[in-house]
Length: 364
Image (cartoon, rainbow, N blue to C red; front, side, top):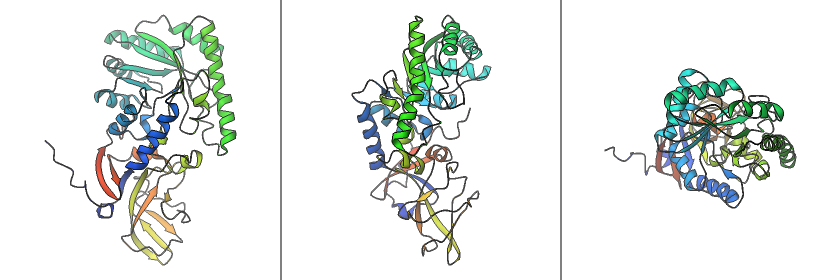
């Protein structure tokens, strides 16, 4: 039997760096805020596992009322099913014989949904599910403006439904739609209006499909940035919000009611000049595709463009000393968590739990 992790009970100041941290109080507040919002609403929460990839945190989201989990990749879904989750949606296309067989196998153990946007997807999944004697739920993805995956709204979506409903070992379960092209609109009123207009295309497609005699069990989509706009739109059933639970620098601009629970504990390792500090983390430890991290307690200090593999250089820094601890706030929680294998949970600057990030690096 494994012993207690020796870091539990340690002060944050005694930890090695860089270390991924989660503030327990802030995280619990975020979970409670989002679950309370949907408690008495028709739409329900299906959080996105890709945000944190941590089974323990996913269990807390389910315990707080989520109806299931959303994944970006098949391998993430496999991790969840291996740990006993029984309702998982892969909000992505699963392509290739090896993958469709993997998909069909986990569908023996749990209710598995997957997005499709063409008949070829459905035929391949149907064949693999037939071979494995399982049933896979298919959600037709509708492109409502993002220009990524998805069939066009209206008649093209209906035609795809007509072609898949009679296939063996699959079940047409509904529609997926994501207004991802609008989630970073900073003005909240504008974001809400434009996101609802986009999602209305999926709602109208649902009505068209239902008028043709096919039951649409759900529309699944939305995000942490649109939970209170498209998430309240009549006809939308599931909200795939992810970042709310950890938050990051980018989403904090969009939904400031949620708290930054996630941080990266780092240290100053060099002061090569009076105005310059070098920090012990780079792109191998912090996702930066949405921009460079912020620094908790030093909001006016900006990180310049230079972020190397293992170093971050800050010009015009305060009088930090070598060895000084800082809390970086990542701009993107999803790609930061994916770089780490564990997350240390803290309360009052003391480590209280260590959680594995079981799906870290799961890209297939």
